[in-house]
Image 1 (tube, rainbow, N blue to C red):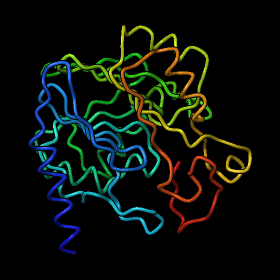
Image 2 (image 1 turned 45 degrees about the horizontal axis):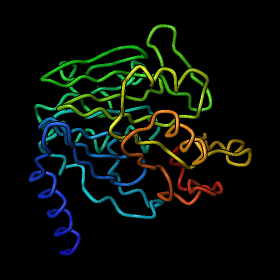
Image 3 (image 1 turned 135 degrees about the vertical axis):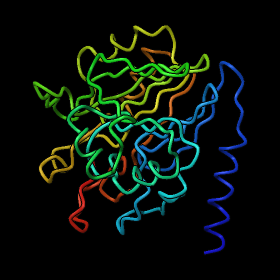
Image 4 (image 1 turned 120 degrees about the vertical axis):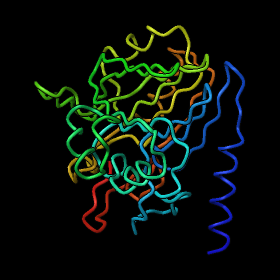
Length: 257
């Protein structure tokens, strides 16, 4: 337990002490599709997932209560390994000034299950832009096998382009390649980093309820089209069925895609 606590403290100290210059940023991958990003003096927590599910192949590097000094928490969609009420509730308490961004269809869950105050919650859909304190977040629809647009609340699967401190990054959320995505992203002159899932998809996993993502070959194609400074593959090896060449398994009734 002491080693775990020490590793948590080391990570928290590393985040707190990082001070990227304008035009630079720092990030930490916490497994699955969870990233901490520090740019423009702001800390972003994207798809915070720290729940200690028994099916995790690696333990959470932080606990929900350790989500301190976070300025913005972004949720891409409602699957349990992306919208984790325990993690979000921890951020609500530990970072009382944090603002939360989510797809419109998940706003009710963000309030009722995670306890996000309505005045700190900013629901978005495709094309929406959120601006605050020198930060600009643009929502882009993601296709998680389908779009599933709600006619009133908008798209339930989103990616976000984050611009702050002279840095531009894109976190796709869970997404497959669809016509128009690359041309949409080309509206930005240059990306400093792309955070993209690579666990792919196949008929076996789809039929068992595991919804797919980009393949690693498609991520290479996206990188070739956009020419970013950095591409960070993610969303693999946290669960047995979500490896790059994974197979589907049952695990305690919890759903993660």
